[in-house]
Image 1: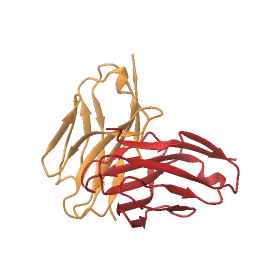
Image 2: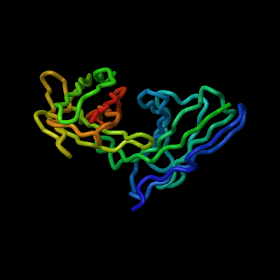
Image 3: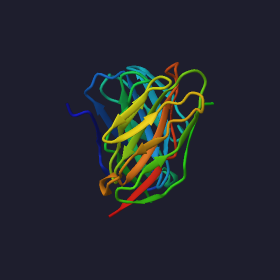
Image 4: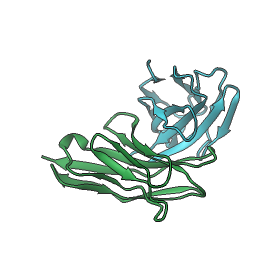
Length: 112
Length: 112
């Protein structure tokens, strides 16, 4: 099993550009999450999904969008990138919310 | 709302020293509690967990006991190694499966 995979690993964007961060899991988990981690800080939840076709906002959703058309995939879309979105983005999945979350390796995004 | 508080880092220890990282939580009912570890440049990995009061989670020499009366889940290890240097996150999942909260993380540095 590959677990949770994320692409790309690194990306540099100019202000105003858009991009999609990809996340795929092969564990048949219903629950998937997107977090951002700013330097030296903890994790902040951006969006989460409890199953295909169902998404909901987390703590810091502004400037982001998600979709969940399949159980496996949970892409995160950045529209009109801003320097404040410079961060490391982690995708995670879990079987249930009270079970452990499995994390991907992260995407390091810089917006200049 | 639910929250997790951890001792501020960084924590610097010599090899073979005893480690304690304090974690306290605020949540209604009976949450599940977790410790995650993040090595440099990587995603988070589950270290141990406990799902009910008085349970002890353990893994790789680390232990933590779910104390309902003090709402705590302190991480301990009897003899740390240089390879334990990482950031440690305490987290909880509420009993209703609607909320997963991470603490801010504690950076541990172990010197040879």
